[in-house]
Image 1 (cartoon, rainbow, N blue to C red):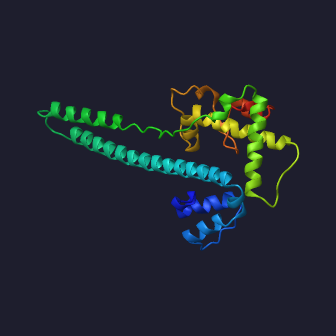
Image 2 (cartoon, rainbow, N blue to C red; image 1 turned 90 degrees about the horizontal axis):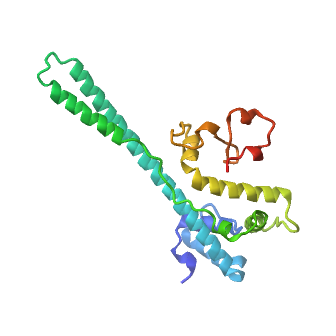
Image 3 (cartoon, helix red, strand yellow; image 1 turned 120 degrees about the horizontal axis):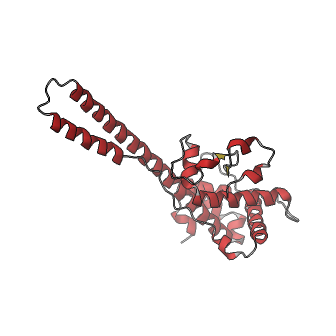
Length: 241
């Protein structure tokens, strides 16, 4: 059985786009499956297509995990708001009470609600981010950067077969690979901080980056903020690693 037989329609579309195929807007699942199987890349380099499929499935799983985490976050927010409203109602009722006979019972009820609200402190949904395995296999950073650059070029050439890049690696390509590497490492060690900054929230007091006033630049890379943000230092020198 072909490896693409188990893929869903949206996954087939992503795979087709990744290997440089033009996907018809109204294509059905069976059409997408046939389009991929009849492509030259599928026939000539099956292992490459298999690698692309594995990468697509991984990305789809990550997106689904992020969506699930966002839904859970919104549910916790709603639950917390309800608890706070209930707490406010109890306090108002206690303040308007004309007798203190049930004061102990009212205070106990309020204490229970306060504990409930505190227990609903919203946590950042965690992702199963991992450091790229190749990082631990390279003894030199420059070697790691060059290997990653070749991988990025291969991916871009696969996406754009009509505009294939050849020859020596360029400075731009090396920089692009470096930023990919930095984003990967930061997403593992600074996931909570990135999550808060993306949503405009304050960093938790426990964060080791709090004193650096970090921000995300246009490449989604975590950089040092504060006065350094307005200094003459290059963006690369401001990156948090």
